[in-house]
Image 1 (cartoon, rainbow, N blue to C red):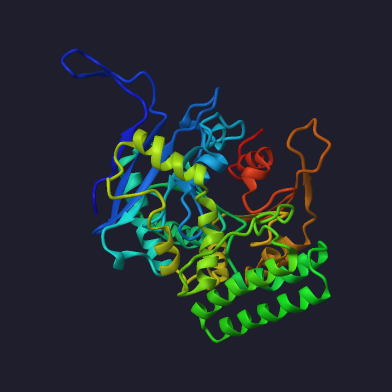
Image 2 (image 1 turned 45 degrees about the horizontal axis):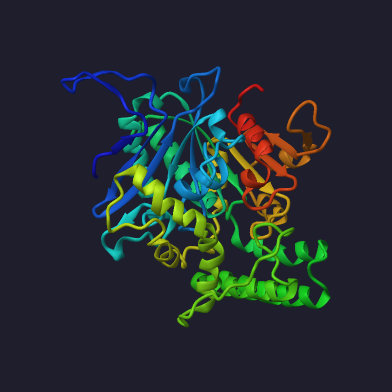
Length: 441
């Protein structure tokens, strides 16, 4: 394991002799690398909470995990969703830094500014992703002792939710054993890839109910969904991933290219690849990872941000290994982790599920379907709860979300949001963060 190398975004005042006199305030951001395995380097970027009335020690720490696998939290989550600045480098009014410190990590290794020196080191399954993150978190909390007692939450999006579930269970056990010192308080699974089959089986009915499929289209989508179900039932997960790409092609053909991240938008078709080795897998990569590496964000990360960070090796390009990350995880991609959520609930870990109303790729119907499969003894009581309407402010009359909770399970239905909830409904997402982290508003 390598040292947790860090750089700071603030300068310190120096005496003429070069001795540090004092730091004018707590550093607002830090970043660095952790070598999680030999020749496997994970990049992280920490922002301290920025609240006018509270010090960072009075607010929680949130680890943000992006999806893909292969999409960059330090890039997309930071500049497109919840960080202090947007990709135009303008302040974001709904940054989560108002409510928490945020730790972005580019994982699995090879994502974003993370990289491997040897192509055999890409993660191929969830267990490797989890073990790498345990190395990182162990190093982080050992070096950054100021965060050891602060409430710590893991928030996630898309495939990041699948990773968050596995990481949360392992972290909970590590805290119980005393091998990692942190105040882990729970995990939030946003539009999360917990049960791929439940998502796929709900695509047809969801699109049909929103007038985006007719009877013929519904029949075609249902047929390919059944192919995927058959492959999963035979434990042919690599085949299921390829068929998943085929299913998305069928949907695009029948819906005039509906956007998988928000059904109110339209996907602009593009050439998937001139390479013919696996068109469905290439198409999947385009939708799940490449869409998050838009040209403007790519230019920002490989230009001004790279210069600011000063520690990115010359051989590393932001997103340069992202396709390798995705393809190496293809066999793992369609495997469900409902059992891990059950284990989290049984261990009394707080679990929050939140989902955007307009998301297709991980639609809310699919999320509700896998929740119904939980073996958690309190599921019946949770299901019987009446949901409560939420508003972004006391003055607002527009319903922004619905919320239901029982014991250590909560669900947020976020209205008028797609797959990237904080991008589409920033105010409601920030309110949700405060609710999840038990902050009075």
